[in-house]
Image (tube, rainbow, N blue to C red; front, side, top):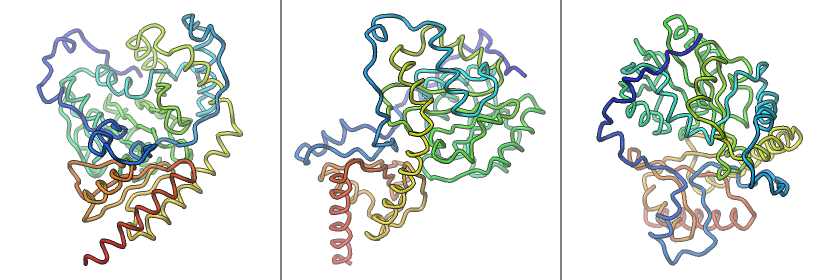
Length: 357
């Protein structure tokens, strides 16, 4: 069933002043460097939850850079994504230059103003973009609180809390929304390491599943993502993205990586081992995580601001949260030297804090 098409009147809606306010994200390494100009280098950026060991793509032919990608090449990418994510019908997938691009245009599929319930706290761009498109957004803490919402958004596993919503619960919500001509958006940006929770291979009617390529494959700068849903809805999204939305290099690297089953399975196991190592490291320093995924972990600490500053002075950047000042999110260090530097700083901080108490 196609989602309600965007009407021309939506395009002319005035954008509220609040909608253009800056959204704070991880990955703002420039700010950390400016705040700690004397920090040791290289910086260790743990603020983003990106796999620190990227997919080892080969060199590309020159025409990947010098020519526009062909429809056949994009089709091959979609075929690889369909196989990787277990999607039977490739027409139910659309590729985009990162899932952020999809998050920004999906609100335009729905006639404003719609009632939008977002399971939170979560990735702030969802609320930001639905608000900017003239919809009424409400943050909920449980899917039992969706009320009369036309649209429900769930990030699974959630960013930054790591909370996981059972697929059965999402199927129930999808059925309810389908019966009322609504829309469920499930953002699976961090789900590649836990395919058992994904809806991609059995996407319910009236649902859009978002898949981020850059996080699991460690190639965030490539800017590649996918939406999975009804073929009619994917056609709408593709038209809104316009021609040549995906670069030639992204198509070629994405196709190669998504087709590499051996690398994917080995990487899932490696990330699980790294997850356990990070949990042990944080716990041994008295910072037990309150949310855990294979790509990031969330801690709550009464001295979170001081800890973040101490890490920054040591050239380690972690994610802080203005609305939750006791929270810090840690991604995975990469090489052994990064793990050792993080371990030393955490242990020193824990010892100092213990002495002060």
